[in-house]
Structures are given as structure tokens and as C-alpha cells.
Image (cartoon, rainbow, N blue to C red; front, side, top):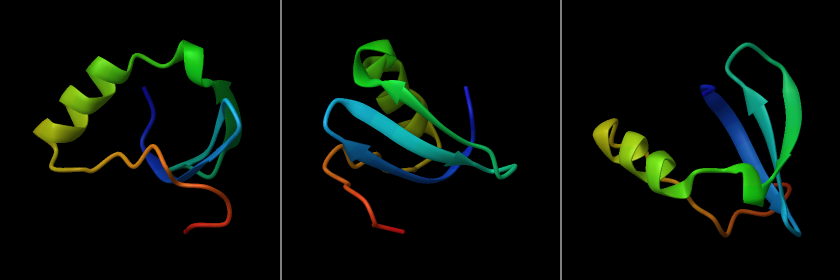
Amino acid sequence: MYGLTRYWLEGTTLHYITSYGGENTVPLTRIDFAKTLQLNAERSTPFDATRTFPNP
């Protein structure tokens, strides 16, 4: 689990930049969306699955 400062989708891949400055990608099939939505709701942090580059 990472703290993200920026993320966007390209096709079936999530690109992200972590709070410590690292940049990486992960296939959407590897993401537990139920857990992601639960944790984000607990933190009042929205997850927008429609974001595409170059959204900040």
C-alpha cells in the first residue's frame, strides 16, 4: 500500500507517483478495488477511476 500524490490511467494500467517521489505502474487486474475504496472512504479520499494523463 502506498500514499499517492498523483495517479492516472492509460488503458489497463495505473500509473502513479508516490508520496516519496517514486513513479511506477501496475496492471488494473492487480488492484483490490474493494479494499482501495474502503481505505479511501475511511480517509475521505476519493478515487477517480476515470483519470487520464496529464491530470494533476
